[in-house]
Length: 103
Length: 166
Picture 1 (tube, rainbow over the protein chains, first blue to last red):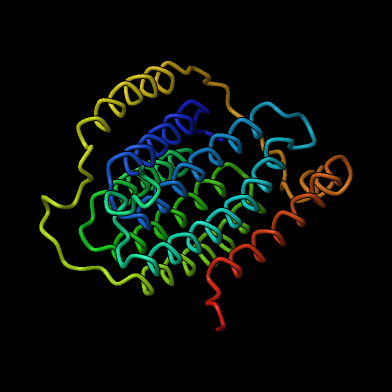
Picture 2 (spheres, each protein chain N blue to C red):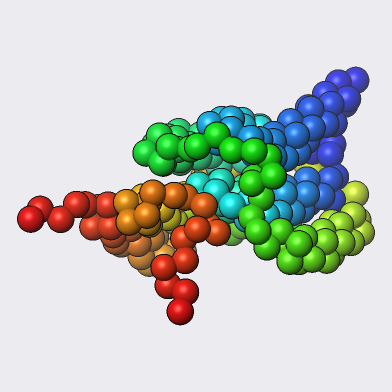
């Protein structure tokens, strides 16, 4: 691996920041879900990089990545279901408009 | 002699990841966002290959580029987007959001770019065998719990989306 570990961590951090900005700034619920996926992917990249660098034989970091895949699939399925049912109640996916729970 | 190939590939993948990731957040049409997200996932799979984690790269292509992108595209399809002006693009509390984003950006930049580890890794072989050994021996119980989680998520998604038959 001719590329140092810090470079992978830097790319991961930049991608995580892009995902954070997307979650905080965008108003479309589906785009917010996509930004969460970007953040999860950035985490995966950091975990795999650290695992390749520091774990001796058993690749523990990559095991975390496998579980993150599972949780991400579950999260996007349930998240889209919630978005669709909210859309059915009120035909919008703008998070500024969805405020039925506001007292 | 061919030492420049890995840094060159890394640079290309980095540019693609950052540009496509920024495109996901900034694109005006949501379908563009979804396809750019798939492109970002593909480039991260390339990063995994560069790190020598081929199995994870394969999972990445199967799960993220395949399944999650298709799910997101279905979500886009079922929630029609009205064309709107760019001023209505960001949420109303965008100044508060920026107030939170900027410290996070500074913190992330400090952490990420102060990280110094110039050690180079030797070839460790593929990652399928150590991954399978860990998952199916040391992490067998979390593996089963993850399958229950997937089942619960599947049932929950169906229950949430199902219409009442009355």
